[in-house]
Image (cartoon, rainbow, N blue to C red; front, side):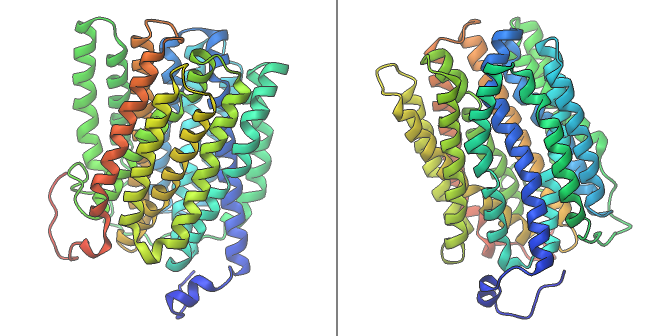
Length: 469
């Protein structure tokens, strides 16, 4: 779908065409399914842990999902550079449904973790395909609005999923939170795929490298080894696993991301790195809100669901805020603002762990953190699309998604290490939760400090040579 000859202001003001509208509806539907699963599982995980036990694997229920995302997002993004996006999307939905079935029928926490891994592989394809569809299906001036609308797809799940998940878990058991999503995913896919089928196949460059599945596997294995080592109780197990994890993961990450990513080189490399830092901070904290509220503060899963919903609502508000001001402020300023606001919100959550602080302060911290995330998340996406080489949007966005999910996997995994080891097997100790929220706030501050490297006027000349990360 080619861009029109209208000025950017006219293009931004015009309405979506019928084909763009149907494509947008299809993307929103798919994002809604992933959002529903995310909000529902996060809410009921404390109940799963009480039933299946093995607190040491609590963080793995999140990390495994996002390690699976590594493979799904990279493979999905690279595949859409070679074939119609509908094909990898259909395959991703099938794997996602299989993961839901395994999770819902899991006899132990270990099997549930394996089910979450499958869910992650399938769900990772969805945003990778979505970014490519936005790049090929909408003109550049409309993309911030499209990202804002797709972020709004989190509104209904954030309002409904936590409360429905808590009610289902209490009424018929947590397993039906997984199993009940199976028919929903199948129906939504059947309704969405026809519109996504209209997105064309990307131009194939015969010299372009094939999908680096082996490197993705090495990166996933490296992340898993690192997290397994950090949870080990003996140093002679911890040290080798950490060394192996870094040895496998760092070279694989360097080869799968733009040169200069680890150094946050402007502009595309910095965007890829900062997305991972951003998700590390937000999701590393957000994944443990339900556990902190139910185990440390003694509240219900229903209240925890309200707190989780608050951050999703303000994430959407922040996304619309950036859509309104992105042309006036620019991506770098918005990301700096978002990182700063997220830092403040996470520090409020750290204070809220104390029993001396009223419970409603949790809501304030969640609202502030969500707005910061929404203000920073979408501008990094638009920066990536603007900085990507024409015809290689899939490769750039797959790197962005890889950093996104790796940051989330490491954030939730390392927070799980703190909770498990620091709590000495108990979920009721406040100290580890404070460490989690203060630590993630420090990580969020890095986003604000490095946001200036996203200025599009710092794009290197096309002929400039690049070096390794």
